[in-house]
Amino acid sequence: MSYQLTKKEITKEILKCGKAPVYFINNYCKISHPMKGLIPFKLYDYQEGLIEDFNDYRFNIILKARQLGISTITAAYVVWLMMFHRNKNVLVVATKYHTAANLVKKVKSIIKHLPPFIQMATVAVDNRASFELSNGSQIKASSTSGDAGRSEALSLLVVDEAAHVEGLEDLWTGLYPTISTGGRCIALSTPNGVGGWFYKTYIDAESRRNDFNPTRLLWDIHPDRDQIWYEKETKNMSSRQISQELECSFNASGETVIHSDDIKFIEQNIKEPKYRTGFDRNLWIWEEYRSENSYMITADVARGDGKDYSVFHVFKLETAEIVAEYQGKVTPDVFSNILFDAGKEYGNCLLVVENNSVGFAVLEKLKESNYPNIYYSIKSTHEYIDQLTAEYKSNSVAGFTTSLKTRPIIVAKMEEFVRNKLITTYSSRLYNEFKTFIWYNGKAQAMRSENDDLIMSFAIGCWIKDTVFVENKKNMDHQKACLTSMYKSDSIMNTTIPGMSGHNPVKNTKEIEKTKEFLWLLKG
Image: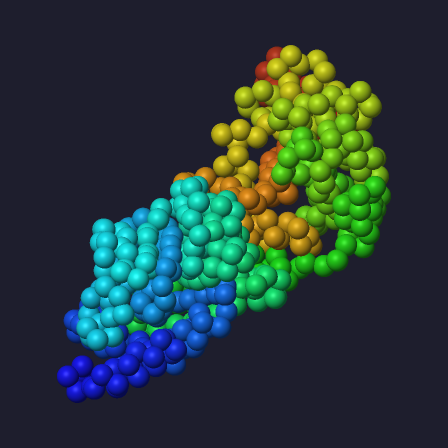
């Protein structure tokens, strides 16, 4: 094209490109297509809109479906920024160093294939994952280590696949000062469940609680995609993959322990508590004590000075409902008083307290206060025994022991209860924890910087209800069936037969009657 232009026309083109990145990309940038090779980069409408957002907004966050060319668009914008501006410093951060380096490679490739007359600067220093132009602008790929970008002043920070960058909250703390003097940020990603920096930042951006401009790009925004394409692409994909790769769904895209459909069902049951009470207003009550019902309280104890909470749930056993819930940061002695009062309020119900390091302190305080119905079990077997029997057994232990062995069991029981809709909860706090309770390296746990205290208290309750109370009821039914099957008889059994010496037929044998005389054995 350059041979057709005069010097004046070239100057005019350069000025036009410098003012309008969309014009520059559409007319002079080329990209590598996997099937067609090197082709001109012709922007779709949604891609042009993104370029304009990059120019108009200092902070941009993009929730996108897969294969929409957003990384390539970002690379083209970086080319324009570096080529037509002096001393711009660009840093690319991604899930893996290789991913970040690949975006830098795209930038370098676009520059390489620009017409010579439009190259306002040339590559002066060329490294594998970084390079510098002759006008002082530079770009570098970085890993997600804690010192990424520190001691630098950045013109543009690009975070690729931001939802998948582990520990981005901490990384952002170190990176933000590098752009605080006017630098820009582009964060782009497919969703990866609820929780984490990308999710929180995007949700806050939609609510205008931060300075980020949010953009959501679903699969069908691409003009070459229709329902036939969608059905073909999703044929061999799981529902989670579809949610993540195409539908931009935070809730359904993560590896949550509880299935997204079940989480939605829990959300439908959420309702405001009837009372918010207690000295800190953190005791939520949906239903008061009723004498005709049986209750149980399960508790998870924290120190009170960290990020974890001390929590408990009140289960109504007949209907499998959570009728009250507490979540607060209090010291163990204060928490034991709250538990004591709640237990008394709900008819001296069974108190099941996790006996971790601080849990033992709470249990000791409850015993000192003579609470009459504390959960005990046999060491190593976790077999429940009543409090009176436990006093005479040396191998009994107060409280519930959550260990590497029992944690997967109670989590599995909780998942079973939720999946089969065997229990009802109304708490928005518990719902929020379910959204961030994920599988990580084969272990069920809260996402980084999130909590699972309510979930563990809830899980303990599900397990206790299904084992202690169900098994005890079965044992009671068996004993009752055994005892009610006993008979007494005043009849004389005659084992002789006619003709034998001493044979004397018994007359008027009384009818054998069933009796309830032995049912006293069931008591106690």
